[in-house]
Length: 374
Image (tube, rainbow, N blue to C red; front, side, top):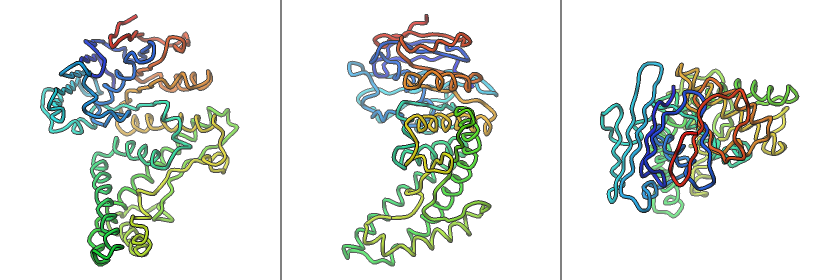
């Protein structure tokens, strides 16, 4: 899979961008605050996923502009595709998204067409950061290969929020504990489904990530990544989420009802699970060095790309936003060597341009929202 043409006008500071990226390497360089990350963000929006920078709708259109247009042509292993994403003031909530000329109900309907893996400096903290960040990583990864997962995950979050409101009302004497049953049955079924898919994905992620980590460490350290459920002691070999797993999940919710009511929120469930990394048997979050954490993050992101390629039989587009400048030379070379057969967009400053003579592709200079090929 690779992008063949990218046109952007009015998205943040980008103006009249029209480029034909190389099918392999594309380096986007320039000084800070010129629009490099904005370009990568525009590509990411065409995947149907929310901005990795958390950009609000009102901030997507240039402060002095009225309209934002993104047009992206790409090829997958079957055919040529075209994505169009437009917004205009004052009705910024009315997004106009088209796939091959057909209007879609929402940008999220683009999901599953253009597959990308984005890697930012913030992702380097995925190993040592909060569990929420790792759950979000796992949910995005699973969604990319399982179409139904994103909706179930979203429905679970909404249902859990409603259950938490009910728990607070029960604690305050405004509702009865008997009302929890109808919520718990639904939550258990969704939670069991999410648990199973997350577990199976992390098991596969571990295979790729551990092999990559063995290489980056020169065989001196062993990495293992595990899914840590707050509900299930054992998930290996279990496949019946509708009956077996959902039954155990429901039993867990029922067992913890009194504690949940006192706390005012659901103490156990997929919303509290974690993905834990171990180096030579020791938990990385407690014992790993900064360099080890970064290596773990690198191999997890690379593993995401490899699994996506394996599951879809098509390599994703790699978006590396200012990541290389955060890495030492050996890790830079390692990353670049592992994505040679994918289309890659790398943003960087002039003093951190990749210097490997083996790299072939295009270089684009970005200044004040304009892009020129060098």
